[in-house]
Length: 374
Length: 99
Ligand code: SF4
Ligand code: SF4
Image (cartoon, rainbow over all chains, first blue to last red; front, side, top):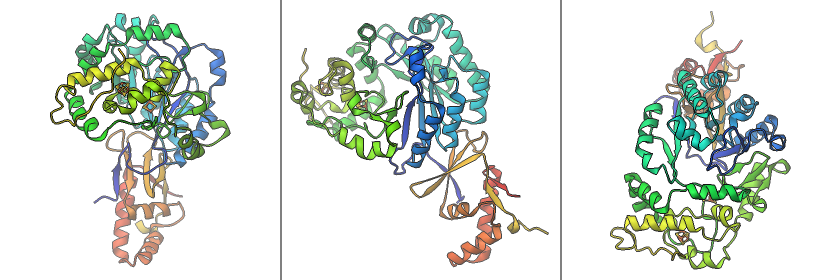
């Protein structure tokens, strides 16, 4: 046997922090109709507050010390940062592999060359908002963005940088799923990851934008039909929620929050990518990753639900295994950690109905979904 | 004349060695070090012990002698293992000859 063996990422090794999400900026060159975070590219106030490359390097050093192997660089649009090469190299020199999430529009020959010479060791994740100019720019609302995206794609291919495509399905475009999948698979060689589940604005900062996102969300029936048509999803749902997930009781955080943490663009560490409730975030400038993970989050997230609707419904619900309702989403939509979100509830019920959970669970255990308030 | 065991090696600048949960993981910094573009490498316990001593100062012969003594192993076997390991690490540009 060779003394040098291939190692795996993600890893089974025990570490306090297997991976870390880092938002380099909330600014973006696009203005997508459904975006849950973006600020204008030229927002100077936001830009001034962003962590510097040196500050980020100190975070990467701490993460590496805690056994972190992968950092996910996201935004906004991470390539809007003029110092992106410096930040990227800092992460790689700390021995981290990088998952870069980008819209690809700002890729330059120099950046593509850098990714070729110092590979991220993870495929670059590119979101394609459509497969032609009309559909793409209807989402991004920036003329010329489709051409910029195509140029980015071309550069990655030319420099042999592995990438995979992601897509977003809206209420009006769910029907085009197969066409999009075929197009994206042909381009990248792998099946694209498709998002049907649109979140509202994480910072609860715009009623108008929330309304626009809500209008574009696929209906619960569309989500259920699309997800349940996937044999892998059906198989997983047969095994996983039925066997391992029961009603969650009053405990709010039964997920990886506080473990798979996310650093926002300004230095506050969130328990997860979505949850920005101030009291549950940690000022990393005044502390350490270790302190946040071992002391702050375990204490801050040990909260029990008090909301009447949550206790009457979610706490006793057998659909928890595939319901996307969670404290972060409840906060985003209702301003409270423990108030069920009707949209996610409707999606879960529709999926359960299609999977036959109500009528006769068959091989599934007898699970009773919580009542829906409609 | 300098034999293979007189040579001194050090980790290359193209790799970052991480120690996670007692295991050494080699994370390539440059392209073309692995068979595929996204590969990381780990060393078995003997490999890890050798790696820790590849510090640009000790010769392979001195490393082999120290390990043979510590593990009460036959020096010839240890020398052969070390040459195999260093050969593979050099081929992957993970170590370079020092000096
Ligand atoms: S998004 Fe929700 S389920 Fe996921 S980690 Fe955050 S709180 Fe938990
Ligand atoms: S399906 Fe409804 S009741 Fe059940 S956990 Fe989800 S939101 Fe709560």
